[in-house]
Length: 347
Image 1: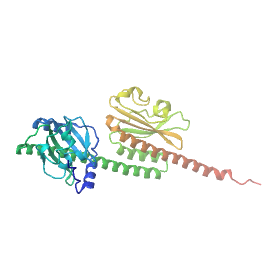
Image 2: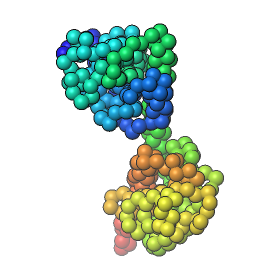
Image 3: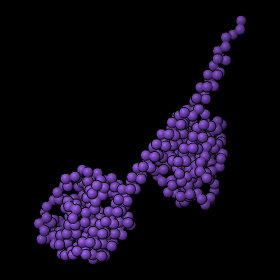
Image 4: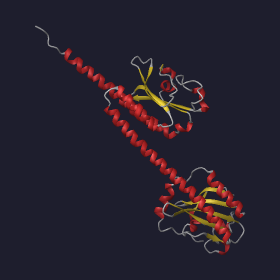
């Protein structure tokens, strides 16, 4: 058996593969559709989309095979990615590279193999679309054209995966920029009114598919008042008692989707058909709960886990800004009262 050689650009090839963010992800119909077509068109028991990692080949899509990966050292696909051309093995028993390979001599009993390399980015060969049969067979020119076309389809899907990753990275960069801008403006705000205007102007861009608001707890601690809001319908009472919100009661974030409507907070508009998801986050700074950050959405996907994490970060920033403004007001009052308290006594 011949162990596959390492491509000369192996570090860059692996980087290109991992940049797709596709390894160890769940099966996807867009890839499974292609391997089903390949399995049927070529009348083979096994068709795979195989990606070659550093020490394994991992199958993004598989028809006719239970295993989701195997060792790279015994892989046929490890040989296939060494060249741009289609690799065809008519009968593995007659090929010195594979004759004593455990995939040939073992239960899988491979005889025929055909693998077309899959290229991404700067033509890095990250894997193959491959066909496997337990019976020796030939591969004519029509077969070669068809597997080449199917391989192009897989490459297009891999390219779209890369595009999705780049779009997600761009979104994260935009979010970081907006967070920084929000922080700068909040730190420069001199009053709560100014801070609320900043929040209403900037936070909506971070959650474009949501409505929401920022609420503060009054000094008597028996009422929560709306300070800022954004979006067409924020789906919450503008003032309410703290116990009307599960998040304020429990001291932790409270998210609701369609499956948990019975646990929706009492300050949220009841049974509103446009509300698919809500998120309430207590705004806490220096151990004190100062208010509530609230979001609602007509589409539950708008409040994904990533967006909920972002919302927690925004709530922390706003809480710190409110705490600093309260401290500033306290210090200003003290500076006004201090000269009065230190007046010299009249003789």
